[in-house]
Amino acid sequence: MNPVCQLNDYNFTKLSIEWVPAGNGGEFVINNLATRFSYDVYKNPDNELEYLMRFWAAFHEETEDKERVGYQITSEIFGNFTLDESVEEEQCPSLIRHNGVSILLGLLRAQIGINTGSFYGSKLIIPTIMPQEIVAEVEKIKAVSYTHLRA
Image (cartoon, rainbow, N blue to C red):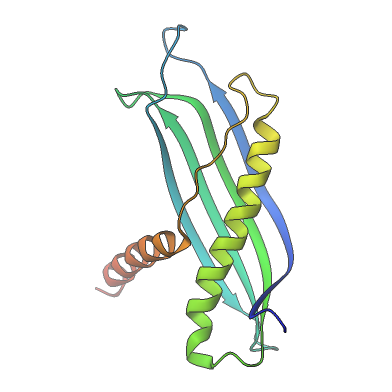
């Protein structure tokens, strides 16, 4: 059985990890890991089953007072995907968004865990985030942005 959505290749174009100490130089307690996501999907004009997804993510840790301390991370990863021929055309946009976000976020989480292992703050494990929630939030933001652009 062929996978419905196959990742053919991926490349990071940005992975910036910075450790930020507290402003007073003292101890601090991380209260929250704030996240932001975005993506763009491009269809191959020569092959209607091939897509390229640009997935962007940013994470920053903060204290209860919203002071940004600890890890500050920005990233961008591109994934090249092929959908199976059995996929109906109207399913393609949803499948590529949900599967693309899930797959690329998984790769990103692994790289962040590996790369932060030697930082002062120790290995950062990005919590599991449901791809459906990311897609819904990004599409909501894009809908508002596009509405303002058309006005």
